[in-house]
Amino acid sequence: MKNQIITVWLKLPVFLLIFFILVSGVILGLSTGGFIIDFKQVGFSAISSVQQGVHAVTSTVSGTFSALHDLKELQKEYEILTEKLKDYEYLQRNNAEIRQENNRLREQLGLSESLNTKNYPAYIIARDPNSTYSSITINKGTRAGIKKNMPVIAIQHGIVGLVGKVIEVGLNTSKIMPVYDYHSNVSACIQKTRDIGLISGNGTEEQKLSLKYIKKQIFDELQYGDIVVTSGENGNYPKEIMIGSISNIEFLDYDSSLDIEIVPVIDFARLESVIVMDMKELND
Image 1 (cartoon, rainbow, N blue to C red):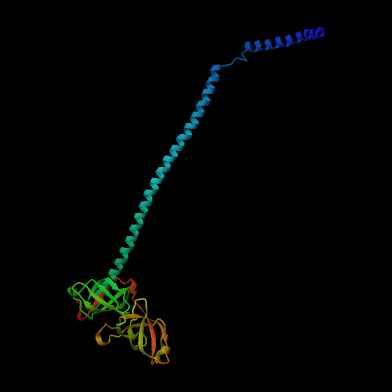
Image 2 (image 1 turned 90 degrees about the vertical axis):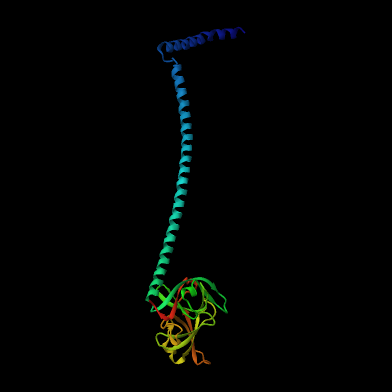
């Protein structure tokens, strides 16, 4: 016990020495200003940091709302432009259709004026696709001067072709029997060889026409694509109106004439207007 007290007593001066050195250093520092705490500066720094944080958050939120607003405006502008584009495309299509219609009308008018006989331009208003009896109805009848058995022609892409003949006439409408009807028979001539035959229909506009009574002797003279026109015989149809072109030729042993297929020059599926001709009256 005595020894412990002596040890503590010996260490006490060292402890005091260290204590006084530390106290002296603190007092010296306070007296020179090195350890003076500027609480105002500390507060300002803290507030500044908070303000910077708040500003950053506010700027981010504001920027987000601004971007959303701009996006909505862009969406509205896009929708407006899309509608304008649709309107423009619609106008372009209409203009194209109007130009095509004008071209067709000019073609028809030019043909009508060039014909020597009196004629009546008309529009197709109905079709009967019955395979045993086909007919095309037009919007003109006796009031316009149309009569039964008048020949009917049309122009497509600058080519004049035979459509058929009038078989029934009403006050304001008429029916045409097209060349592809089973009952249709047209005296025809191969333009190149001048051989005469008879063209008949096969029931529908999709089927080709048949040319009969062409002698076998001219087989080697014929080619695919040769033009066949109206002969003008019997006065039923005007002469040299194009009917179609040869698409196939068959040499049948049991038949004395060739079996020839004809593709009509008129695309009946796209036919919209026709010209009815009065063979007995000259054009004014």
